[in-house]
Image 1 (cartoon, rainbow, N blue to C red):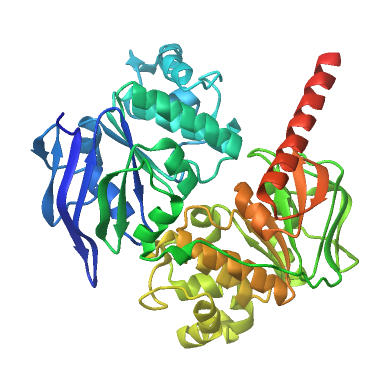
Image 2: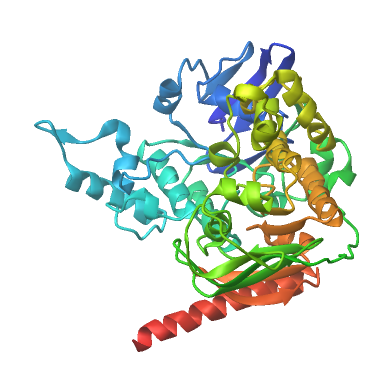
Length: 511
């Protein structure tokens, strides 16, 4: 059978770096193909070639055996290739149907036919088991539901090839299972799916074949996944097996209670929240996507108002009206899960992004900020986190995802944060960088920081946290010590959530 899509000998160079060097890729109808590699290995560049964002310098792309050249994303889309990026590409105030048909709205006599658009959207939502009115504004959807809307939009364009970039990075394990089931169904219907992920256990469950990139070259090309282990894949990615994180044992040396929430209710919808984090402690906040964890973090730093109850810092009531108050008055740092939308200014340099939290300390008279002073102030933190960048003047948007995350953390270290809230620390980063960030979190706690950790990756939570609070429906439903035994903890955590859901369902039925 002729492959649906082939890339042969693709090479793409940028000033000072060869992003792709003779790369091959083969996609077949009715198969799910894994594409893996560390950050900076060339995955994003390859996807940009396939979607017409970039043109290869050498090599060729074949579609159904015929050479093709894509001069724009529109040409790639017209050829049946659709991509769903890691970052959502939807307009929140528009409806599901409007987002799905945004570039081809049905119009009659100059008026958009909304009823027709909703009717045409419904079969694609049904196909993806997304049982939501297509007229619902996207802002009311969960991250997982938004992702399915994007997949539905791609399918509605009659796409034969789906490129999925980190599709499970920001969704819960329950939602991951649902997505994998849907992808298997699409595969059985003849779609060719390229699945880009750093979560190796998902690859071995889902994918038929694998291509691994390392330093812009093929470490393996079109290899059957059957029989391969996660260690095999890691070895191909990094050249050695030891990149898998092994943090060893941790004995927490706890200090005073640095952050406490007492019967807190917030403008985001939380009620009765009680929580404390000690100096030297990593406290986990676990729950399914939509449980209200990120919103609680943002309430602590003043992004949502406190309606009742109180926040205490080192035993003192803290009135925090805005994120600036949190940093300036209480030394609270917040590493956002959305590093590109909230955590970083992608067009600005590494130096400027890292120094943004300390400008008030290093600015000279009349508010001038001299570049030499700025760089001297942040260089120790960039070096400590081993941020890989050609220079401090490099735009953050040009760094790999892992190095962007390091910059996100570095700016709070520069600000001398005593309480660090870290939301989804390893979303979209490679195996080696994930291990580095895990070790960094423990080291920060050992150095005396109080860390509140939010993660949807259960294995990460079990590995890192000393204690775990479980959230559901904007409430804390239980607290438990962490035995660091994955099977035991995963069962306890998920049982707590399911029992709470059952209790709420029974209560609603009784009313």
